[in-house]
Image (tube, rainbow, N blue to C red):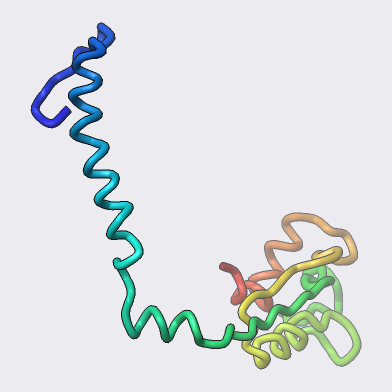
Length: 128
């Protein structure tokens, strides 16, 4: 290290280990001594005293109506059923920081193909 090459096939002698350590230890000590002074200043002080930002998280479920349902209506639903687009619009208006999908996300038959056909039309915009 530092100009010396240690063979990977043999163990370095205790003398060479001490030589390497006497070069590394002062450097580490120097870094440890100056680290409290690095990054200090007005920007760091202001960030440390700023109040925490509120986080909005919305939890949703039953978010993907079966595309074979007569109420699916191209992903728009109707006044009573398949309201995934209307509820996703409500969540979008709240501008949440995160959306948690809870519960049975695909209702009726719960097939992967049905979920994939339905999800992107309404809730797909919240993918991260």
